[in-house]
Length: 292
Image (cartoon, rainbow, N blue to C red; front, side, top):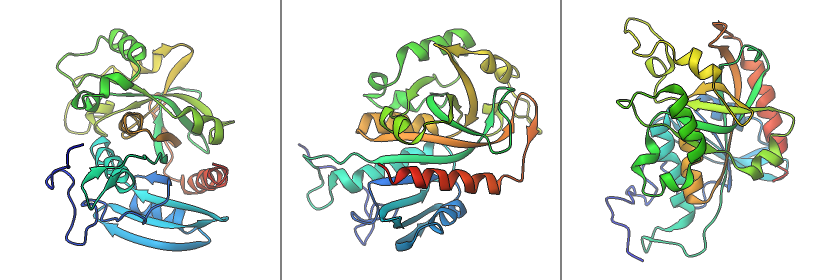
């Protein structure tokens, strides 16, 4: 094994991993990921005890005890680019020796559960107390193709079906399809609606929204909402899941996303008063995570 270069395993002056500003031992092996730093605090308030807290930029980390179980909640900020940083650095905390700069022989597998908000792409998904689990995700951000192992872990059949159905513009990033952890789906996703999540590299044009700038593809909502694959519809749009699933598959971690649906892109509805619904989802996930 070759030593990892200092410019690639980037550590701070205190020895912590650069962006997260965390050291090995600061986080648990079960980690809740949220976009919003304030939501990390909201989840940590449910802990019976907080044993560690650190914040750097948009990354707000709490490790604590919930019903005798050690858990971590960490905010990632928005987008697949942030997820790419966070998952790689979380993996490094467990699976790279910071002294020798070598990967460890015995690898640790993490449980990474993202709790987010999302917009529905099916008319029968309401915008109040409605939760959707991303059983599959199609990323239109192109991240998979930057990794040598990316094409080996994503779902080629679903990828090809989506590209063909959408008549995908070759000038846009090439889509790739990824899957949630079967283990987490079985353990914590029972009773919840499941579907395909479309992960976009932005909130506006990549998701078909227009303010003052015109969107190139004005039909993406209509066409994506009609796509189906082996009995699965595209249920929702968001900005993180494909990268989370891709990196977790390559690194050997378990990953799953569940979103509180706060908008419907087909019916053009939006619910700004979703805080109580989010609290219910948080409590539901916390109570299920202690069974892992």
